[in-house]
Image 1: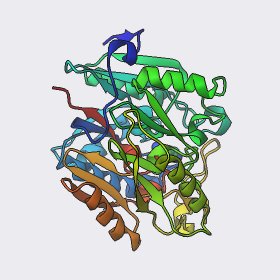
Image 2: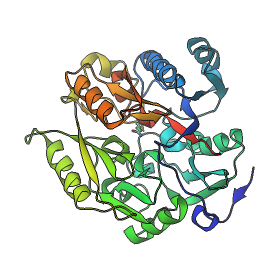
Image 3: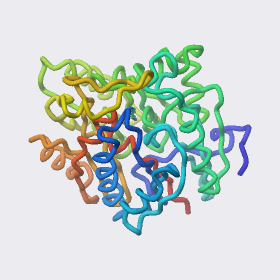
Length: 365
Ligand code: KQY
């Protein structure tokens, strides 16, 4: 498959909203014991549940290292495809391709540079070269040409689009020291407009409190549909999250999108703060260069980190009373989709959630 020298904007391709139809979704199998406790076994069981839940809505492909291939094939049901994709960890939202489509039914991938959320400045592990090749491998499997940006670091979890010209991002992430410090905010805007083919970028300030990705947007806000955004929220003014959510709320309700619409914001209430237990901390191998998991650290748990599938929403649950409220809010936001909750503490213990471990392939007609 070809590596293209032009750009989606020049070629008439756009990134669709996640709520548009998918051909399927990719997931990568968890295994590294310095991120996933107890040799990743509890996380693997949870990933199986996520894959099974999504597979009732669309085709699921799980990429796995050769070392874990037989185990993953054994643990996953037969309707889920299992293929070998070497990786450094299982965050395909971030290292996978961002697919773009045109109105003739063609699809291509955008392959950003991946540096483990901040490279040698504040990245979460080293090395990350296998992750950085995942996007190309997925585009090969999907038979799509790709645009490769060798000099621009970006993760898929740091962008959400409405498919109609609007992009949301956070300054905390996109302007962080470990990504593209050589570029100004204006230069970053130009690259995003060119490679996602959007006209309007809404810059939120910060993401979820204590999010190790430098505040990925996909943990704090998501497009339900054009003109409507779900925002992670707490009413507790003593929680540091309150000020962060309020600041973003004010930005959103005072913004218009690329089509000139005012944005409707729906508050998606957060669970109570979730802290790492002693047992959980002790289950993770200590390795130099990997972010440690310390007892008492607050996890960046948020219901906004849900996956929008064809006809369904797969959202994380935390064994918290707010799980029910989240389900109710999501059902109200998506009246035509089936809402499926998955107990996801084992995923948030690894630093992200259901949205972060998925990467959709849009359907083209
Ligand atoms: O939230 C994500 N998109 C990824 C989290 C990465 C955590 C690595 N330990």
